[in-house]
Length: 345
Ligand code: NAD
Ligand code: UFG
Image (tube, rainbow, N blue to C red; front, side, top):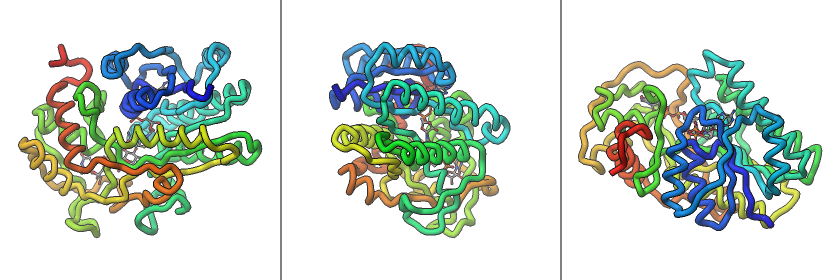
């Protein structure tokens, strides 16, 4: 049976959206999450969207004996590994926490997988591994470098995965390098629910729109870009989720692939200001903003070449910036307090 999949971090933002698409595609999933950055309510809502219950194990990837027990209990075909900490600023303040969770946690998981001969692995990597790109759009063979512990933890795991695939050709590893995931499921039932004041642009915009935050600060308007603001490759989280289904389909049909890095982006750059205006126009809600200094560590422009994903996985993004803004707003306006909102209406 090639359809039993372990999804670590499956209660989180990208994981919860991916669970829906995996189930829709006929995969049988077990979700493993310690709920350190997510609410179990997200999984309940996924269950209501797909109309079935989902096996859930509350556990930490640092807990080797629990992972061992899980692999003893189920016969997995593959693991999709979302579990990890992701806040760049926090990683600078707490590097040990980030390396332990993201690197040691992944090592634990890989050791248990090796022990049970489960050697199909999909890793949540990031465009952050490209650092400040020399050429655009970014191709998978571009040089890698990172400037913060979060990025280093992703890059370190990529190096580990490359060495592992090199040492044992029976491993099949896809490292999906996400660009900027935004948006939400069209039901408005699940979406991104940051714990604190958001670090990322789209949740900040939507929290200003809903009145939780006063105004957006745009970090820099003197970049060498179309309008001076930063340019990113925003990708709808449902497209991203489908990229994981495509990667799994590839693993089902191919062996001895080694370590395969694949960009998941749209291939299109959108500036911060363009996104803000698209949000205002597509929702009809105002988003007051001011320009402030650049944020340290930000690059001017970052967007993917999406050609390799198309060629290899026959996957490409379908949804555009307007879809991303509309679906973000649908989630935010229906759940102004995220998963702690009193009731969903
Ligand atoms: P998220 O925080 O919403 O989801 C991560 C999930 O992993 C959470 O449910 C959390 O509780 C769980 N988790 C964390 N540490 C764990 C541990 N030790 N054991 C078990 N569960 C644990 O984040 P997300 O945005 O859904 O991101 C998913 C993955 O994608 C992460 O690895 C992240 O680094 C990567 N990624 C995210 C982005 C982005 O912008 N969101 C971009 C590139 C890469
Ligand atoms: N920005 C603002 N104001 C804000 C937040 C962001 O102007 O309040 C700007 C940033 O300066 C940048 C753009 O919006 O130009 C996007 O910023 P995000 O923080 O949303 O995203 P980043 O591209 O900085 O980083 C994100 C994730 C990283 C990941 C990277 C590549 O946060 O974890 O995408 O995938 F590594």
